[in-house]
Length: 423
Image 1 (cartoon, rainbow, N blue to C red):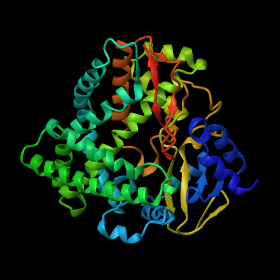
Image 2: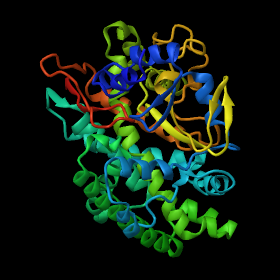
Image 3: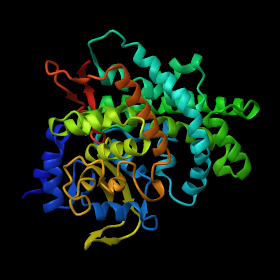
Image 4: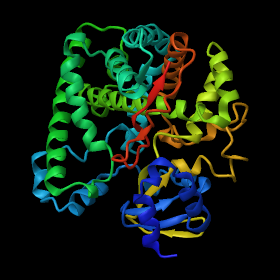
């Protein structure tokens, strides 16, 4: 089968609406596929994805070379990057040890059990306020009117963005999101240049805002993420954990704590609302106060329909993985979506099973040194969201007159642009 056949599949609308048959074919017939579309090798078997993610000796998470390739493919004059010299500086999730280890220790101060416990009251208030806006409605777009609102308000408040600067923050952050979604070959050159320029300027603006807030928190600490991280960074007294580094880490926490939850909540509901999962849906609603049950249920739903479809890594040396030669500087697109339904690891992988013993081995939160630091907070926030949602709308169901619409513009992230429900 010609390789361009697979690239056509990866570009197709089916890759957004129903990717599993395509991924199963690739996993079975071509587990290492050289994709022109994705600018690298698409890896689909769990054991191979897991091996590469856990390799920090000959694999880097710094994807700066990929960013350059994306710009070049769009025909963008690379002199544009001279105006934004920080555009390819790796964020926390794209750094490697030992720098990653040092900065992760700083970020971890924002996710202690005590800190997360303190966040619950704030998140419950914000989620309740957003749901109260829907009171009296018989239908609404769950994505646009709920999932696309509370995560941004939540993480901004937890990080320490003041209410009177929220509008400034959200405008800036939505411009930054342009830089982190999709493969740009579907965009016109002028559009890519616009996205790159506006997104990087917004990045600079957000860094400036967070740096201002960080200096303020040094003088007047509060019970927020910035204050917790600054206390840890002062103990380390290292330029790699400076106040500027803390502000940069805060920017990453905002990104991972907003867009990801905004997209993942509808995907979890999508899994639960399938006809074959009616009994699971009822069990889910009946056990929302059982933290252990709900944590496993959410992980199982994420395994079946993860937000992050694939993530990039780059080989720093020639290496072998399952008999496949990986060249030095080779770009690797690691399919989390395929790996998480690999039958070699998850028996009967298409079945939603809340008692599955290894469900937390899914790759929706990554693995290895880059395993999601905020996963417990993410699950807690989603649990609160579902608890409050079903307390108000126990009969929530899909609206058959308004079909779901997948977001086909974002390649690496599976999501909806419309999720109509009846209540």
